[in-house]
Image (tube, rainbow, N blue to C red):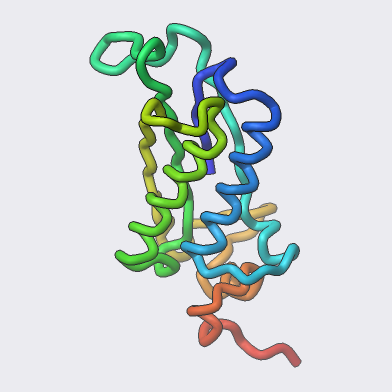
Length: 150
């Protein structure tokens, strides 16, 4: 996940909460079990936009709104329509919960789910297929893709 937030709006505790809740959102939407090893595949990078660098329609909206966005990369075949909708709701809720005012009407989120075609994901110099990622992430609904070891 590549997260974009305005600089100086979320304090350290807010960012920590945001990362935790985004990981929880990923686990719920992608159906990843409560296993630290499986969740290690959920990377979150927070990028803070400098004051004045974020506009909507050419206007700095920061006096009225807290614009936030995230681009989520997920292997094609992991999400269906229901889990995409769940992802968007949970990510929006994570931003609002982590906001300094508890997200009372000021947080406006943009969530982009980018589904990477099978065989187009490279990790540590290797191409990973959906079956490879399913084996490591433990997607509950994709266990049939994982070949038994041994």
